[in-house]
Amino acid sequence: MKVLGMVCSYRKMGNTEIAVKEALMGAQEAGAQVAMIRLTDYRIEPCRGCMSCVFKKVECPVQDDAHKVYRILTRYDALVLGAPTYLLGPTGILKTFMDRGMGFMYGYGRELEGRPALSIATAGIPGWESYALPVNALFLRALGYFIVDQFVIYGQGPGEVIYQEEGMRRAKNGGRALVEALRGEKRYLGEAAPFSCPYCHNTLLQFTNSTKVKCPNCGIVGKLGIKGGRCTIEWGEAPDRWIEKQVIWHFEQQVLPSGPRFMEKRREIRDRTAPYRDFSPPAP
Ligand SMILES: Cc1cc2nc3c(=O)[nH]c(=O)nc-3n(C[C@H](O)[C@H](O)[C@H](O)COP(=O)(O)O)c2cc1C
Image 1: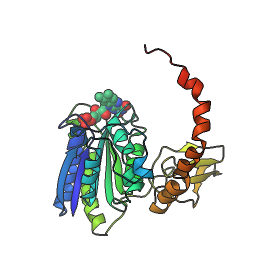
Image 2 (image 1 turned 60 degrees about the vertical axis):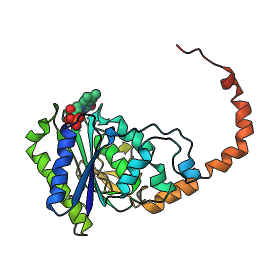
Image 3 (image 1 turned 135 degrees about the vertical axis):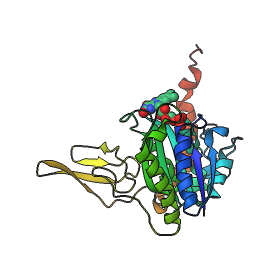
Image 4 (image 1 turned 90 degrees about the horizontal axis):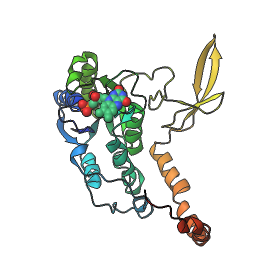
């Protein structure tokens, strides 16, 4: 059983690294072999939108370390993801890395499907971490991981996270839970909190109209109601968009057909976009 920690902070021995290490210590105590990388030690360039990982199912042509890091993930049975909160969400490197992962989400097959992951967000101020766990969950679920636990640990200056005893305990237990999940003993640590998505436990929900609510990550829809003067959500049966079958459906039915559609219209598009090509506002 091999568990990898991935730290998405530039601060060495910062709060994220410490929290991830605590989880790895828990995994090691439970019998796993552990390793850790800092995503920030690698050169991760933005996706250029060529779509060759999806349309041609070939390795990304961008010459950097993204493919190499995804390959590292495939060598480990479980993952501890740790990302600090910058401006309410995880650091940009995680989003940049996520955008580069479509080959591993669909193109080359879903090698990471069904592996357990623990998601840790660090943040300085309670209430200022709105997108942190939902975006971590998006990264993990899109790749096919299932989440054994996800939580925020607070600490501002590097190392202050050690004062968060409950959070650190949860990190260590989360590491152990990964091993339990690998042994087939447990899948999810807790019940979904009220008003959170029953699949990814995301609490950042979208009101799509006055009667419906949607999990922006999983895409599942719930019906809003009132019982005893209190709001209720009755979640529908619509499948989570990140289960393997749905991901394949999405790419094969919604994304791949855009290729021939574009090729058919490309001359018309070229003609109709001529005014935009001819209009060149000067650089500042
Ligand atoms: C540019 C920047 C933006 C930040 N934005 C937030 C924020 O929106 N909410 C929050 O709670 N903490 C914020 N923080 C604090 C960090 O999340 C916090 O210090 C965290 O523990 C850093 O983890 P690290 O030590 O692993 O880098 C921010 C820190 C920086 C440097």
